[in-house]
Image 1: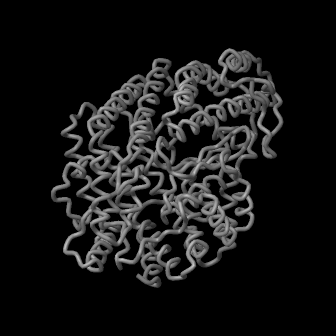
Image 2: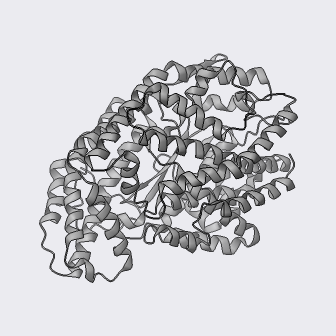
Image 3: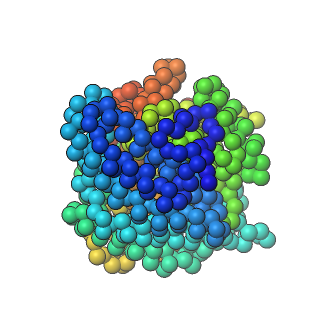
Length: 577
């Protein structure tokens, strides 16, 4: 049996029994059915019903999140995998139809119109979209898709290489791409590439299973393709697919030329006529790579990150200091651990969990600041009693995280005794922001093609990938002799497998974060006040209103993009190369 978690932020249970075992369907299902059968005879009763449903959802959500987190951290542990798959294969499929009926009950309630809180109108709009696309026959397909995604995570978790007498995960091997010694970089890059290529066919097989499953899910819901299904299921009420494609056009015209110039400078600094893939992460002046912390000393990494946050905002630093290793943080890279990084929310305890694969690079610092921003967002909004309304749209969730990276960039001296290294790290981060946009456009444009061209062959998919890659590339990187790796480069982008269409959010959010950074540079206190005010709204306002509350425009046209790129360029011009 499990009991309610002992957390100072966790509200006392009022509906769910304290001794409920949330992994036992026989205990959980009757509570949902009791809510389904409960008479609702007034607006007040409807609000009470919503609160009870949210409490139960929070308990179940936390149990499932804990199982998912444990599996991410230990992909090869059979018992942990069994516990996670119990949620995927048993709990969720059994409870989804009841969840649909509960949403229908709320949407159809005659008392809904009398609810005075405007945030509940937003909840109605979201649940109406869910009701419209729900199909019982999609539940086993969604379960199967999660199982296939788990296969991809396990496949990646097994990818290790032997390099100069030691075994490394591909994430750990990535730090050697920053070494000034070019043969070292090339050897590490080739080893990583060759290891991925060994599983190329298996990775393609996994992806094709997902394409088929997702296509069938869309057809079952009466929608033309999975893109249309995603737009509705992700509640993208405030922008269209065409706006995303137009955003990519703006990036091609505005940002790709900037990256082309950065590549030209890099090749000149390195004394190369053409860059090779292993020349992109090394310092262009051949200085020793930035090593902000020892990956074997994760506690030191956390302590220094806390000091950076103390400079930015003491109240946020205090929140970060409350996060504990094991319960809230799993940061080191190790064999059998899923790649990537994320923040997830323990909804009943009202605590965040941060997962990443730290290898001792500056990118790890950026990642922990990024995921900390997500944690601050969750903590700011976790007082909202209705679970669905705690969660902002993803496009604004990423504003919370990307802004924190930018806010912290002036305080990287906590990691670097030499001030020149701190400035170098800041410049590296800003350059990464510029370089991100074409890659984001590449991945997002590819996703639009993947899901609006059902039935395409593997060869057609590869040809389209290369065409899109060429569109947003600068032409400065020579892949001669490395064509197989370039054809399969998209395999490393886990969003394509795990979270279809979840990548444009980063681009939209980066524009919001850059607007906050611009304001932060002029008036840090005002920018932080807007940041925290917007975070506290959670998902109780539409997306454009969240941007406005933070002091940013919800706009991803060239009109917004170009001035921000100019400002980054001016800031980089003030930093030593």
